[in-house]
Length: 607
Image (cartoon, rainbow, N blue to C red; front, side, top):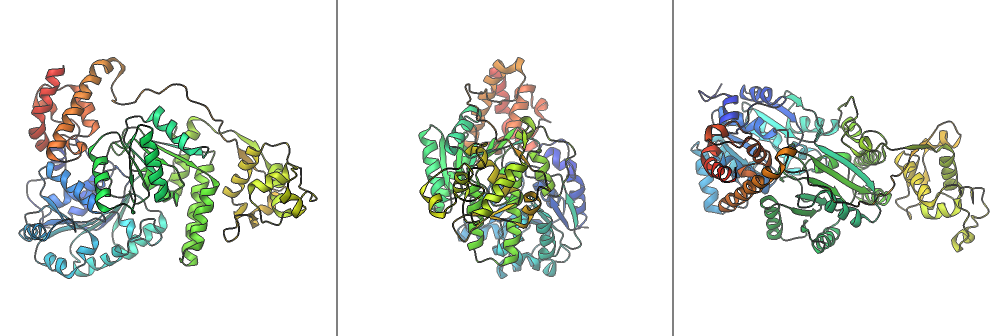
């Protein structure tokens, strides 16, 4: 077995990365890979996937090749590794010819511990020839869900990675992803030839993220209240469905006093790079983006992810919200939605050129997401159940746990609503149907003579808002479908028959009452005890300022110097020597020598 002498996984973890111990199955995965075996690793964002291949690459002889889908992701990881003293580089289109040749020469000479490449470059004849000319420690396939045609980030070039076990059968491979349901997982195994690989499936739970979902009601104002009352000066991401909405929302947030930057595929590559760099290197930046702003965002202190529109699936939602709170500190996943979002997604799906099998799977995924939005149960339990994991007890950190949703007996209301859909010919949407149920007279009702049917005027006991809620929840429960090909009218499904016959009881959730916030909440950070707040907060600001200065000098994001968790421990411990700094989270030997004296000086001056 090609192993470098005198090093152990734990010694590298402590002296190089500055962590005291492994998390969950990290050590088992690392030992499995060091021994030359293949692995499929499913681990949540922030769970430490990178260490699972970085440490084996440092221990096994040769260079670890990391296949990564995005240039930005490569750049961030290589910058972070270099600060730790690890010999890492990347090959992608951002390098000119001379720089690319320099990296290739270092690779051939065995002077790199890790080399990051895009899948399309790895599959070129030129690069495959380079691999044959040097010693390879392992192949790491990051964001492995990109190989799945049923996934939300499918990339055709990933399918070509199936040649790796054919060309290099003795080199261990590890495929990693933060999101993969059972269908996607099976496809990863099949497409990448990982039939003999051991599967390591960690818990998908991100307990530090608080999930909050609201119905759309003046969504811009809802977003503004969320940001001003809870997230002022924090970094975060706001996702929108369209490029135009991204531009408009970013402009509007800027007018409200936030530093908000747009990001979508319609911007120039230079502008996208500039906005992403600012988000990574500055604090308090809000990125407003389409899903084009996704993988490659390796920023640990994102305090919130907000959705102004419904994502495509619960799997996509988990992936996107997973960009919050990577440092393990409290973060919020906030979303507003409406039934119009569902109709738009379904219409886009039906108009696509995808085959019927794909459409059927996507419909089920959208239904699962709508069920997550409408649930009265713990949101985390619903999400984890979808991902194949059971959470025994409610989480206590989502809106339905913190503010339990009241329900009401709605069997009779459901029967009236479904009957009205049927009696009006299954052609109309909620607004018209409510007018019929409420017994209103207008030109359309008179034209269709719906003031003469049995359901006209039988729903006066409920308000318009409550009827809107009834129709929305009937769609979410699968009793109604939306006519995508026509004008968006509601149609009955076979599942509604027991309801119409009175054989099934229906409970509806009470939509939450809007409460106007009167007072701005205190920021949660820095995370220090009440007794230390006055003194420690000043030191906190000094250390953040020093971190920003060092980051500017080295042209790297501040979190690559030290994460917030490291700064908080420095505030709480207040070391006076380098020896006392050793063992603090995220301070390995290289960073201790490089940054320790400057931070010690700042602490002495303040304390």
